[in-house]
Length: 265
Image (cartoon, one colour):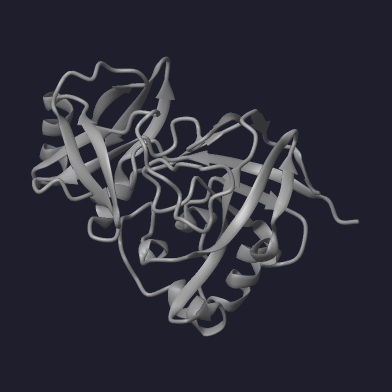
């Protein structure tokens, strides 16, 4: 039988900014450790993403000791994994979900404001703060980070290969900002996945991922186009939405690593 192997692990510490590929990661209740635990909000405390600010993709993020280094052009700033929460909470909303966040620091907010040319704040989302997964998709009362709706997104390399065979200009996997990428299996088979393991960690697929406009953003240039959504919409749409990838909940909270075999139970 064709084995399915976890080949890539990605986190996106600051929502909308560049991702980091990891060899291994601890799985937590809200998703992979450090994934989307920070985000930018505008002067009205509305969350900012590549949908409206595609240039966010040009901020590259890398781990550095007990912090992340964030670089834009030749400017950089350090974001500690753990920082003191001193200021008043910032009440914001991610889609329809009210969330309580905290400004990291005035200095961080000013740095991002200067880089983007718009007033904004960098806020963090403490692990203990609530944000339930949508009702009807919970298994064990799961919560989610600042991701759009679910803790983890998995996509098969075969699915991207199928899409790219239909495109005039193939796109890389980073257009879809997955957490987990696997090889093996048929194109789009993850749509129907329910109970599976990666290594020793159990997961549950709960809902195919409805895509917004972010996959049309070139993650290296910050430019928006029409593809790959135009092509996807011709064969991957339902009820006015375009689907690519599977939203996943974590049942266990262990370590996963590249090369882990994926099994079904």
